[in-house]
Length: 379
Length: 216
Image (tube, rainbow over all chains, first blue to last red; front, side, top):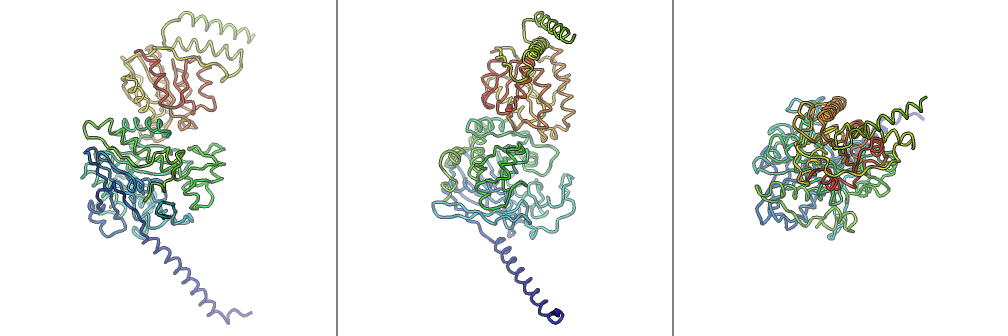
C-alpha cells in the first residue's frame, strides 16, 4: 500500500483527532475550573464577606474566596478555621463545610474559610488520575464536592521558577511557590498564592483573631499524621486539647512548629500575628504513594489493599486495617479537634478574652461508632 | 570460672544494695536494678518476662525540672499532666547539666520528633549527649529521676527508640503508655533494671501514677 498517496488524508485525520482530543480535554478543564461548588450555610452563619476585603488585589481573581462568619449571642474569643488549604485533602474542606452548614456558635466568633486556596480547587494534580468530584448522600439529595489540587492552578500563576525563594530567604523547589502553606505571611502584590496568604494574615491582624486552625491531611506513611502542630505560644493550650481529645477517643500527637521551616501557617501566623496558630493532620490514603487507583471510593471509604499490606509490615503511622480510614472518621477527628481546642482556649483564656463555644457539629463518636454519617449534618 | 565470677558480682551488688537501703536516689536504684538484672539474667535468661515493680509512693518532690528527651512536644503534655495533679514544674526542653542546681526531681519526657529536633536546632546525637550529661549530673546531685513515655506508638521507631534506653534505665520510676510498648522493649528495660513502673492505657492515665510518685 502506498501511504504517500494518502498523506494529506492521514495528516487531516491526525489534525482532526488532535483537535477533538484538545477540544474534549479543554472543555473538561474549562468546566472544572469554572465549577461552582454549592455550600448551603446553616442558621449558625450570621454573615459573609470576601477575602479580598483584606487584599484588594484578589478582587475578580480565582484567589478570592468567601469567609463565613458565625457570631455567637454571647461575646467571646475569636477562632479562624482554614479548610481547603490543600484541596486534595478533603477532610479539612468537608469539616469546614460541616461547621458552616450545621454549626451554631454559642459564644465568641468563628470565621470559617472552606476554600482557602480557591485557585487550587479549579484543577487537580497532573498525572494523578484523580477524580474531579466526590459525592455524599444528604437529606436533600446527592451533593457533589470538589477534589482539587495541592497547589494553585498554573493558569493563575505561571511559570514556576526553578527555585522558590520565600521572603525569609528559604529556598524550596519551584512548584512550592503555588503551595499556599509555604507562602505565609504572604505578599500583598506578589504571586496570586502570596496574595491569598497575605490577605489571611491581614485579616487575622485586623480582626485580632485569637486562635487559628489549619485543617490538613497527610499520607499514612508520613510521620506527622494524626497530629497537631502548634506554634510555641499555643503549645500549652494544645497540650490541654490533646488530653481532652484523648478522653473523647481521639489519639493525637503534638508536634512543635519548627522555627526554621518557613512559610507555614503554624509558623508564620504565630510569628506575624497575635493568633494562637495550630494545624491538624489526619491520615488520608488517597494522598499517599502506596495506594491503588485514585478513585472516589478511596477518597470516601479510605480502603486500599496496598495500604493494608503496608500496615501489616509496620510502615504506616496511623492505625489501618481492612476497615480503612474513612472520610467520615477523618472529618470526625478534625471536628472533635476544633471543639476540644475551643474548650482549651476557653479554659485558658476565657476569663480574659471570653469563651468560644460551637454546638451542632458531629463528634468523633457520632461519625465512627455513633451510626451517623457526614451527610446527616449537611443541608 | 565464669559462674564463680558471676556469683561474686551478684553478691557484691547485693551488698552494695543493702548498704543503701533507704531513700530514692539514683545510685541506690541502679544497685538494686543491677542485682535484679543479674538474678533475672541467671534465672530466666529473659528480658521481658520479669514482674514490673509497683510504683513507690511519694519518692519525688519539688523543685522539679522537666525536660524533653528527643524534643517531642510530649514534654508539654507532661507539664499539663503535672498541672492537672497540681504539681508545679519548670519546663526547659533543652536544659543542660549546669542548669540543675537547686532542683530535687528531674522529669524526663521521652519521645523523638524530627520537627522538634529541627526546632531546637540539634541533631539526634547532640540530643543524646545532652541527655546523658543531664542524667549524670542529676545522679551526682542525688536527684530523683522520673521518666515518662506517653506518646504511644507514634513515639516509637527509628528516631524515638534511640532516646529510650538511657532515659528509662536511669529512672527511679517510670510511666509508660502501653500502646507504645507492644514489642515489650520498655518493659524489658524496666524489669532488667528493677525500675518501678506503671503501664497506663493513655496519656490521661498518667495522672494517677504521677499523684502516687509525688509527695503531697
